[in-house]
Amino acid sequence: MIKIVTDRKFYKSLLAMAIPVAFQNLISFGVSLTDNLMVSALGDAHLAGASTANNITFLYNILCFGIASGAVVLASQYWGKGNTSAVRKIVAIAMRIAVAASILFMLAGVIAPEACMRIFVPQEDEIVALGAEYLRVAAIAYVFSAVTSVYLICMRSVQQVAVSTVVYGTSFVSNIILNYMFIFGKWGAPELGIVGAAVGTLASRIVEFIIVIVYMHFIEKRVKFNLKYLFRWDNALTKDYLRHGTVVMANELLWALGMTMQSMIIGRMGSDVVAANTVVGNVSQLANIMVFGVANAAGVLVGKAVGAGDREHALKCANTFQIMGVGLGIISAVFVLLARGPIVGLFNLEPETYELTMEMMASMAIILCFVSISAINIMGTLRGGGDVKIGMVMDLTFVWFISVPLGFLGGLVFGWPVPVVYFCLKIDEVIKSIVCFWRIGSKKWIRDLTRPEAAEQANGGI
Image (cartoon, rainbow, N blue to C red; front, side, top):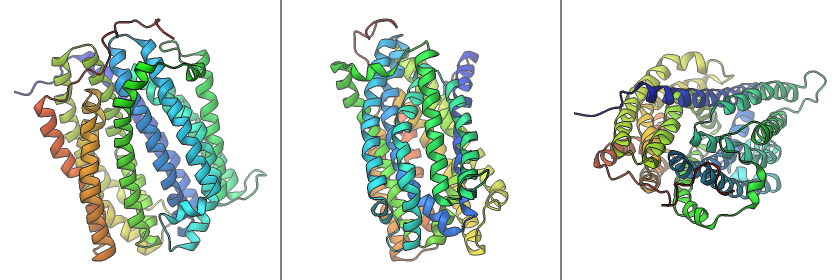
């Protein structure tokens, strides 16, 4: 008989983490949706240009997420041991790496935006020109978001998630107001079109940064991290992060590069397909809001159990989250099938693009059942349990050797229908879900990654 968690405190802790993270995801979706709605009013080419430019931002954001997630794997286990000194050091390590990466991405976006765009749409000169205008401004925001995103994600490891809601909620409001002002030239602002969307995004990232710095230095009391720790080093924990955390970072980067390769394939199928895929991506993000909230909570709760040495509870958590993954996947699929018409109708799409989007939605609904299972198991249970390599192996194998080649052949060689190509590009989620059930059933995924001296308590060290 499968053992699951029955303790009410567990579910209260789960909801206390999952709901704020889900709300943050909802806010992120709202930002993306309103941006795309405003830009779509300028035409399909503008929408395709901004969304293609955001492929660079997507790759950068995933890299930062991977850097922070690698830190969370270690930090959540140290949190289970009550060692907040180690948590501070781990956050500092992750933030240093993220800031360095942000500078490289910013320079690429500011100095060579056209070259970045042509990676995805080499034949679409209009889309390249529009996207380059957007990217040249939006890339400046990367340095600010490096600090913000890494800090807020790392705070999840110690079950501090409420601040993220405040940060992203404020950013959401400012983003809508500023985008409206600068895209359409309202309230005395210049009418900048697609560049206005980038200006609004940059200003919103600065707002987020300021709020996080104030919270970090004057309000947060559990970890007590501040920017001075960026200049303090811990060789032992740095070695641990490079050993375990960079595997998670590589996992996310491999996955993101796979998604980028998929965008390159779609970008070569026409501007209408690019626009349709942008809308599908927005709806997918909305449908997965609670899935990724639960996945983040799973990683912390499982990691905390492993760090505390409670193997039996960790196994019960894993079983519980597998059941949740199946249930949330079904709910997400049904939601997409019922809501796709009204949501797609919000966008200013050409009739052919509208029909193509609706067809792609049907393929996405099927895939969402499996995305829920793989996300909660890989990002949550397996990472929290210390089994950080399995996700990288799965993405390397199934994304790069199955999904990408199959999508390339179907879309650019054999000319299969776009919804079929989309399904092929996402088929790795089906395979990963099956492998996750096998891996968790083996019980070989529980690994304590902390050091023996981790009994040090919250106020020790730096």
